[in-house]
Image 1: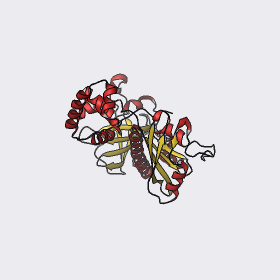
Image 2: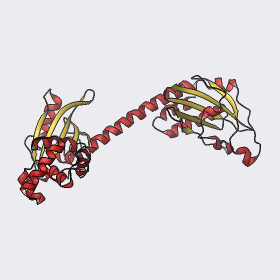
Image 3: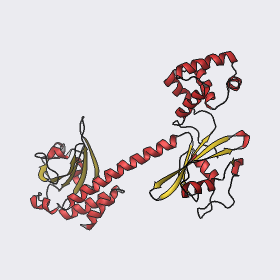
Image 4: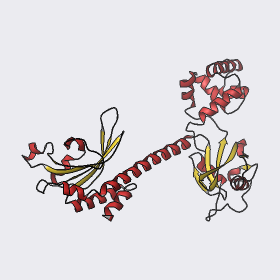
Length: 360
């Protein structure tokens, strides 16, 4: 009994544990196979998912992956068992008139969108189930119901977590979450290089001694990041900002915001906006959203970086009059009136597009 119950709850993380639990259940009930079915209900046809089963013997496997309700004499209430004899479709044609399979099915749980069934079966030559067999297994139903509820909750939370991670990973700018001592909690794709750049650590997890405003690869900060992290995490200080300047005139803006991702655990959200070109997909987005021509999209993407119209003309190799005409058309199509408004609009769009990760 304890092995069966333990396997049901361990199945939240390991489907093999459910199979071990069902195998133990088979041994206790004299069954050769046990299966857990989840039936997703909706406006269309019901979808039957078999989430766990034991290794079948002989002809029993032919009856799997079917709707367990098909062999029931009528609908069940939650916790109710029904004992039936089931003929497996196709067996009679191939092997003759074999006796039906003794089957015992319980409705474990029901909601407006989902039903969960536990089905056990014996070989045709075994004694059929009776109500005594069903009553002997009543103890497993509440444990299976609780384990499935926990599993579904864990799956929903895991899906939400994966979606959140994917959203953060797609941001064009770098995002880090770190503790006051510089321990990195999480970083998105663009932020991994910045984490190595901003948070070099000793094996004990502490900041490298002497780390201040001078970083590797020629980057220099206007303020010491360790000091700002400690200020934000250990006090009630408002969000802070740091300006970073790298080689070849590269610049970045770093914003540090306090947060509590683990309840009492205080950490800081570090967002790094590095000045670089527009994402590769920006031209397609501008075409779909505002019907910009390829030439207009190229000009708008350059304006997104903050450069002026004369420099954009030089980089694109177009005349000043041509660029003014294109810019006027861009303003009209995007509903903006100044280069600052246009840059702000494009930056907001670009922030959710996957761009090249920050270089190390």
